[in-house]
Length: 110
Image (cartoon, rainbow, N blue to C red; front, side, top):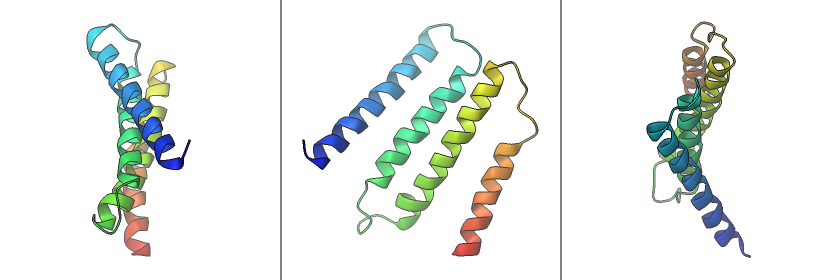
């Protein structure tokens, strides 16, 4: 199997997982925090798609900066969903601090 076929299959599986989790969220009763995990999986799938866009045709802001931010958002959403599932309150607004830290580092190194 060549690399292109492997990438297409992996993206298809990631998209199928994201869609099936969204359908489960909308049609069934799920446990607390599941919606955050669905959003995290969707962010991961979208960031994978953005990383694979050709950088000579699309803006680096789209293919690099937004894709990396979506990976950060994926981690933050998974963490928040896990805390809610375990019955712990998400302490403070660390997701906002993480987002602002990402933007600050982006401007610093740009």
